[in-house]
Image 1 (spheres, rainbow, N blue to C red):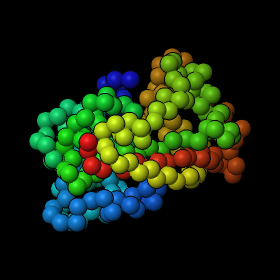
Image 2: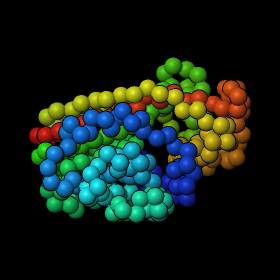
Image 3: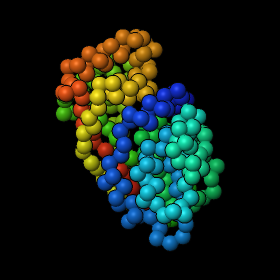
Image 4: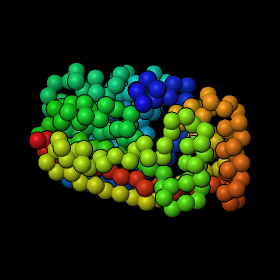
Length: 254
């Protein structure tokens, strides 16, 4: 999918309110990799509304310089409201990094955005822009559809109604791709559950590009099917999604 198809314009408020956050343990090892001296320079590439920044910013020194880039004006609007201290930029991550001098950042982060990028170009530019003692970090929240249940049934629905969608669209080997560019890659993972009311889940679903494709194809019938699915799986008015979240720390560009 091209960046323009993944812009989420008009969806930012719902996206920010209902999308899952990132487990804190994915960030706990960041301090082991970042420089201990000097003013830290950080960029969140494909930042969306700054969901990763919610967990990242409290872990950074107060004088850190933080940039965020996203293709969506709407996402940037929400992100800037949340984090006015961050310098926001509109455009693709690859183009933004290409415009920066070498070794511009000590941390280059892509959270839930790597799959939308020209990945080879992004990794090349991230390696050029990260300092010799810095880190390139990729984070993903993935619904665990392998264990069946609601998450698997929802993937079935998307594959049925969202043209071109496949639950395996993120099944590439991030560690191997990073390993082509960096000398050391560490993977950290966390398994967790997100419980949502039916209305919260429907809202979260509506903020995704896959759901928007389904709505364009079949109209409001998509949301009727989502609600029917929720009714089959809800307990006490809530549905539960199981996630497998991953963080990849890559250091020392080749």
